[in-house]
Amino acid sequence: MNKAAKLRTYSISDLAKEFDVTTRTIRFYEQQGILNPARQGQTRIYSPKDRVRLMLTLRGKRLGFSLAESKELYDMYDSTTEGDEKQLLYMLDILAKKQADMQQQLRDIQRLQEELNTAEARCREALDKVREREHRKLEKQQKAG
Amino acid sequence: MNKAAKLRTYSISDLAKEFDVTTRTIRFYEQQGILNPARQGQTRIYSPKDRVRLMLTLRGKRLGFSLAESKELYDMYDSTTEGDEKQLLYMLDILAKKQADMQQQLRDIQRLQEELNTAEARCREALDKVREREHRKLEKQQKAG
DNA sequence: ATTTTCCTTTACGTAAACGTCAACCTTGAT
DNA sequence: ATCAAGGTTGACGTTTACGTAAAGGAAAAT
Image (cartoon, rainbow over all chains, first blue to last red; front, top):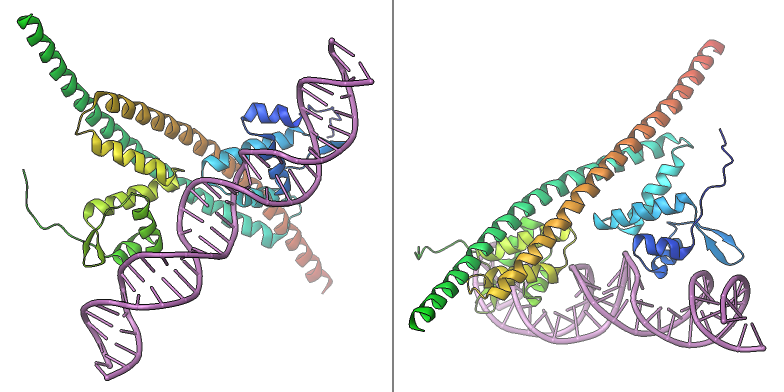
């Protein structure tokens, strides 16, 4: 089962560049218990797992998850192997709630997209009118000139 | 064009209840230039337009918009009637960017949903195992008893 | 008449998520 | 040797979006 392969590692600035965040952010996430880099002396060494967690966390942020929420999900996910029935049921409950949140977000997005489209249409109309006026003005000037 | 119909109005607590926010929130939004209630003496009287803005703002929040962003959109939308070409082009630019954001969010949501599903599956598996163990334990006890 | 019930303003407090120093290693390049 | 590039740990500062409490007006119910 254990592949014993030396997996890739990343420096803090590797990850910072890849995900376009500051190193401060990454250290902060560690302080919040979201990342757990190994150490080589003082220097942090990030594993692929850390990298995935960072990715998930940032995506979660875009979807309105707090860092605490993300952490809770990771912790629960990790503890599913232990198999405490109560914990598992609790996690299923949380997952269902998150799914419901996502459904709501989907609706929100669809509505907003429609509104953005009508706003764009209105905007283009207004623009056309402005340009038409400009056009007629030029015509007049040419006739006069 | 002017229907001159007395449109519905709302008190601050009407809106607070309808959208499940505090009155503090609603006053704060006014302070941020998002709402513009009329006044009857000191008391705020909200129009349907205010109501819509509140709704949009809250939806925006769920999608990660800051109050300042929402306000900017409203201000620009209102000013489209004036028809300054530069403004209109700027607004079209903003709208396109928001659309792009929403596309990204759609992708984010879809991925997250998939992950939630696999997490759920894993969770159910773990739960089954726990319950199977429990079951066998009971069987043994019955045989022994 | 007075007690609720809403409403108001003003103002200080707070949690989340970092930004921004400061002050300090260490390590490879010049 | 020294110097620049990257790493580290504090620790205080900042922004956003409100919460919360104080102090009070005005109207409606008892």
